[in-house]
Image 1: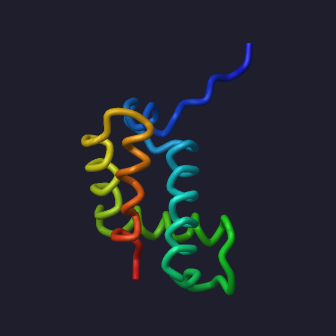
Image 2: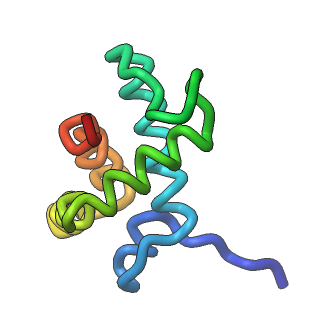
Length: 96
């Protein structure tokens, strides 16, 4: 039997940030940076998945602000699609 992968919404329902949540945030960081011209984070000369994960890590470690953002989105979401729409405001949470 194969492993069933949880969605980001399902991961958050079980109380954690897992691979699907990080993947969703990674995709959204790339969307934001393409749409806004947001520069790559310090230590990176160009955007890559590693750069996106560095931005997500910085966001989530900022005095709980990133965790509050994720929690607020989850509590307002009804499913994976609504979670993605709420997460699409991640640009407001990116460290500057």
